Each structure stands twice: as C-alpha cells, then as structure tokens.
Amino acid sequence: MSDKEQKSYNFSSVDLLIYMWKKRMILLIVSLVAAVASIVVSYQITPKYKSSVIMFPTTGASISKSLLSSNYMGRQDAYGFGEEEQAEQLLQVLNSALIRERIMVKYKLMEHYDIDPSSKYPYTQLNAEYRNNISARRTEFMSVEVAVMDKDPQMAADIANDISDLIDTVYSAMKKERALAALKLVEYEYLEAEENINLLQESVQKMGQEISASITQSGNNNISTAMKALAEHGGTVLTMTNRLDHETDVLADLRQRYKEARVEAVQNLPHKFIVDRAYASEKKAYPKKSIIVMVSTASAFLLTLILLIIIDSLKDRTALKKEE
Image 1 (cartoon, rainbow, N blue to C red):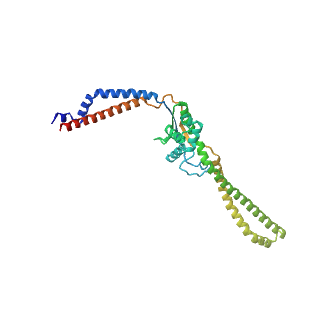
Image 2 (cartoon, rainbow, N blue to C red):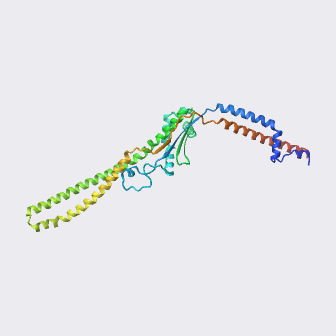
Image 3 (tube, one colour):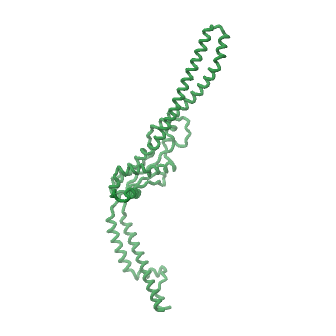
C-alpha cells in the first residue's frame, strides 16, 4: 500500500476522533466564532412573553331540557365538563374568523406588528403573524389552551383573556339566531293550539246550553223530549269533548316546548369553565439564548467538520490520480 493510500481515512469512530484532534484548532476557532455570533444575534432578537388561558368546554346538553324537563334522560347535564367532541367544537370557535377579526381590530394588530397597510399583501402578513403568535390547542387532559406570544407581556395576557371571553359571545350569537327562529315556530303552534281549545270550549258550552234550554222548554218531566235532545246533539258533544281532551294534551306538550324554546333563546350561560386566566409574565419565553447558542455552535462545528472531510478527501483523490 502506498503512503498516499495510508493517508486516506476510513472514518471509523477512532479515525474520526483522530481526524478531529488533528483539525482541532480550525474546529475550535469556528465553534468559538459561531458561539460569539449567536450570542450577539440572540441579544438583537426582540424578546417575547407568553401568556395562556386554560379552560374546559361545557357539555353539549340542552340547557332547557336539563333545567325544565322532569323526565330528561340525557347522558350529560348542563353543569358538567364536556368531552372530546365539545373540545373540538371549542377549538373551531377559538380559531374562527369572528374571534380573529375582533382581536385584530381591538388591539390594532396591523400597527402593533409593524405591517404596512399599503404593502402588497397586508392582510396575508397579518394573518400569518396572528397564527405565529396566537394559538389554541387541546391538551392531554381534554382541556383547551389559548397561548399568546407578544413583546408586551401585559398585551399578551389581555389578548388571551379577551379571546376566552369572546367564546361566549360568539357561541351565543351562533345559537341565538336558530333559537329565536325555533321560539317563533313553537310560539305560533302554541298560540294556535290555545285558540283551538278556546273555540272548542265555547262550542261545547254553547251546545250544552242549547240542550239544557231544549229540555227546559219542553218541561222537566218530559223524558222523551230530553232523550231526543240528547240523541240529536249528544254525539256531537261527545266528539267535541274527546277532541277537546286531545287538544288539551297537545297544548300541554306545546307549553313545555315553548318554555324550553324560550329558555334556549334568552339563556346566556357560559360555554366554558376557566381553570387559569392569563397574567402578564415576568420572564420572556423567546428567544432561548442558551438553545440558540448551543444549536448554532453545534451546527457550525458539524458543518466545518464535514467540509474539512470533503476537502481532504478530494485532495487525496487528486493526489492518487497524479501519482497514477
């Protein structure tokens, strides 16, 4: 084997350590420069503070049925914690445009994020900044966390708390329109059934008065006349009485539905349980200077090592070809 071939490394673990030791000065200098540069850069990055709200969703149980119905057999009541489905629904509301736009307007986020409104895509930039700094996620405990990162710690806390407060506003607005439409429908049916009962009651009462008057005019002892009057109008009275009983049952059911619909239309119960509200953090969450320095230094070290190996390998191959 020639001397040139002996200089070629197989780069086993031992060879690599020997190679790194031979190149230690270059690797050390590059690593030190990278460490110093990363420290300088990390101090120039605007620090951000993190605030978060932890909440649980409420159940999807009907408030009206849970409160008013004596025979409600639902699996959940109105006072319990929600499950996975309710947590996903809560996340959808938190990530909705309704909440996002209100927060953007209230806190003037385009100005706060230093976005030029006359630029080509200002709202695309604004939405990107919003997604980078404001997030909502489901935790492993089935709760939902709203996290806000901002250079102003108090603003981060205020945004997080406002987002959690807006949940009830958005939920109520979404449900109230449907609840009011349902209330009007049930109210119409209820009032119509009530009117029908009043008409039936008047008809039965009038028919009874006519039978009574007919018997009275014929004389109290005239049994045949009484029987004739009953035979003539009794079937109608019985039919109307049965119909009145049926309509009364219908009215009772509609009255219960009307009460439930009215509760659904006017109720403003919260749709989440707040576990921890956000507060202004005293310690910055970003950047992590130690992580930046370690990653930058390690990256510079590895990149330099790879480049040195490549350069020396190319030199060895060139030397071998010349020798041949």
